[in-house]
Image (cartoon, rainbow, N blue to C red; front, side, top):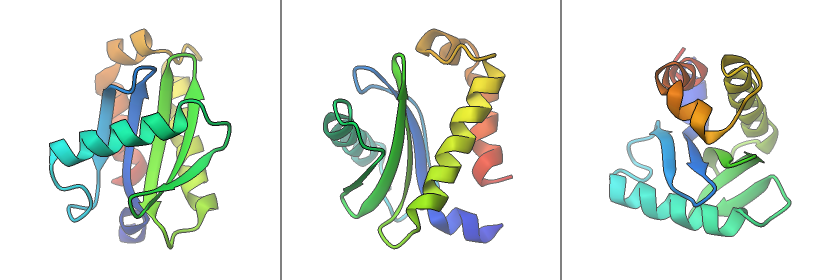
Length: 127
């Protein structure tokens, strides 16, 4: 299981304005401060909120993402990681949240169920 922690550098959910709903970074050497994380997330959102692709390389990280209604879901890994594995983790994250929220994946529902979504984040990478 330690191998997965090395693959996934972080996961986050941003709203449609690029503000953090939830984020967790698993590598203490990558974006070690909250200020650096929020700056990275703002850059990431600015580069992806109008794009149609599912993947971007930014600041030495490979990021896969998915948007839905008013939320953006991101999974970050190193540039050497297999994008298909990162995409698989992203799909797992999104599908888990979709099941938790009974298919109502939107900001209000996420905020109302933040504790269990935090648990899902932890189980995906720490489990």
